[in-house]
Length: 410
Image 1 (spheres, one colour):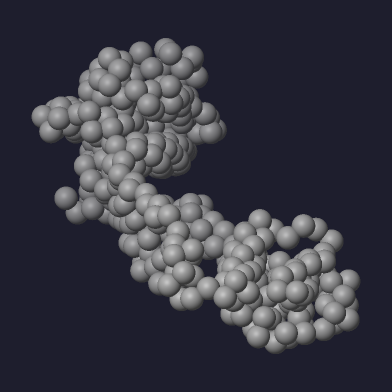
Image 2 (tube, rainbow, N blue to C red):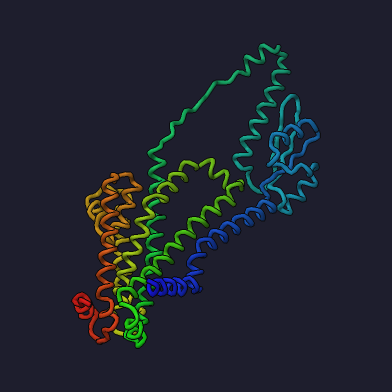
């Protein structure tokens, strides 16, 4: 047991100390940080250099004050004269300027700019002008308060929007599907290559004969495998803890708070789809491919072929990955149901059915049980023949070595 633990700890330490592991772990957080930082500073700079505001010029102070009060964010109040407004417009410090006045009981507004007033501000300006003109009309018509209230009455318009939960679930399912599949694929590709290269680099070396004389090949293989599994679990744990920490850190920001307010139900659906039994399929899916990668690494002819060792595992994972894409909106298809029970494919297809809510608890349990059973049996079998595989150095074709590897019994 001590020797097994020594192999596990050494394999784990060798992996987590590498720059490639650190970069692979931190890259999602770096991308999020860079994207968020660029977005924040771009927004800050653009807001500081914004030319979307206008100036309001009027000899009637009350008229100008009323307009600015209703449109504070759209107006630069410090510009009060036509001359100053023209200079600011020429320097691109404002989008334009609005002249307001009243003549003969009529409100007159003239906008000056290099481009038309944006539609949002135009609508607010027209609403302000209409309200003001209506007040002047009532005053000129000498209507009493009761008559003015009757003429001011507006139609009542209301909207009752029914929350379409099915639509939200469908969108959340699509997002969850792509996150899960890409996460599975990227982690799998990385650790398949790492495992295959590590095993293949030891192929045919004298050190293996010394190691096998002090411990059994099976124990050595299990130690290697459990060490890599420990690294995988560490990475998933870092993603979960780091993701939660980032959320706690940014949830009070206005942009994040607005997003949670507008799309809170969608985000909850996505998180619920990811943080459930799908994590078990992700973990055991990566493990079974890791075992296959170790088997492939042990089958290469010599250590110099380590770079080719992961190819069979990579090709199989690519096949599973690309097979999922046509069925992203059809998780109830017969092929999806069949492959959701087949090890090497179930870790891609059963999560798809779970996200789609088209798999029962019994089906999910059966699929996971078959996957775990396949992991245990494959690990036991490769561990049983590992010594013969690693000491095999004949430079024959891959398929001959593959058939011979399958034939080893000890």
